[in-house]
Image 1 (tube, rainbow, N blue to C red):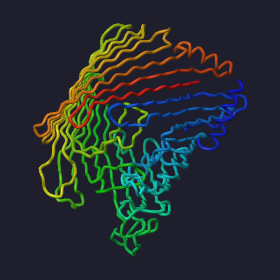
Image 2 (cartoon, one colour):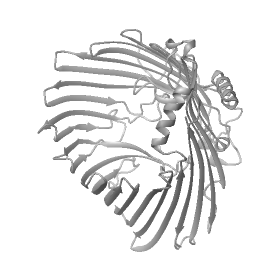
Image 3 (tube, rainbow, N blue to C red):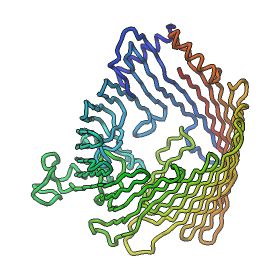
Image 4 (spheres, rainbow, N blue to C red):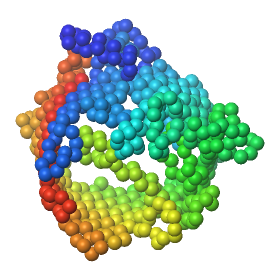
Length: 591
């Protein structure tokens, strides 16, 4: 092995000892296996400038990411990391390291990772610490301990930062279960507590309080007969909303029987929640049906999940049907949904809810799909067009009751070397405001209409692609109507023996808004140029990989990429016209 490669091995081994992701098999340890390395490392930079407005992002950012696996005499050590200069600017940094070794039926987690016990205890919350999963035979055991949230101090000179302030929050938990022939039984426990000493000062006008939480879930899944199955899960959570509250002999959970009196200090600020979900189903040869019941108490909170839809009770039936050798598939989910379970609100809603889909694929050319839904939804929207723009304020969280209709028709044709495709997508959505009002008011409703049409062309042998499309969008709200429309086009071509890939795209969108009979118009043009250079083509890389394995040398595949994005937005009454230019340059090494 070359000197540089040996130095890389030493460096990665030292990093793995500190903090390190993914699974490795320790039971295949053998000196004869030698040392092997595979993975990828990428480095990217982003430069930005704006004219006509204040900059909406930093002028320069860089990102370093890697997924590496070192096989040392049969011992796999996967290592994943991501690092950026943006980590210095955010309360909970972007930079993270993860390491998850495994041995037969045992797996560990170290660094920044996540685990899930149940939907209502620990459910995918990131933590910095350690975890373990054991599956000896039919038993399933899990445990974790770590920091769920680090302390972020208040900036008394800027009240906008109050929302990002936080106490240090530690958490731990375990789950034990047993599985056999499709049957399973489990119990999970999770506990989290804020460190009241982690913040030196909390302003009197701040809403932040140190909290404590204990949550338990019991789940059973049982096959009653050959085609009949049932499952049930019951969860309880106790949240102490302020650890500084005066302790009393009786907390807000009235009654002499309190499961949590020994694991949670009773205070006047403690609240109790529970949730239950159960199902009974039957599976036939070409159909199935399942009846489900779900109830989540108002305000249900667990510090092991980022958000839980609560204050609702659903009773639904979900049938499925497959016809004509699965060329036609139908699925539905119908039932009754109720809110205001504790009768604390001035009004309650009881409504019919349901969803249904039908998919038809008569042959290899056609695909038709239609769906309907009117369930309540919780949505978190974040921008996805720019993976390097991590502004935590550029997001949207909302809870709504909506009815939606969707339809998709796609048709593909052409030869083995030239492919054509046509697609039409339409959507209608009726959304009603789910926020509570102090006084009875008329329900605020919004209508959304969306249509997209597109054509694609792909000439496989010459590496040429072309797509063109258009979109049309209407939003109707009380006192406001918004139109959004415009064409998009993109083209790509590989040259120089498929080593260089060139892409260009352009989109022009026109927005027109009518608010209280006053009309405004705005247009945005966005153009993008991209280039990716790979010295070795796919065929050459496959041959190199084989040679690499036999000779035990590392060569790998290198690639360079560069992109330029230009955006121009015309002037409106509230601001002048402006332009933005973003340049990205990156390097990737996979081996």
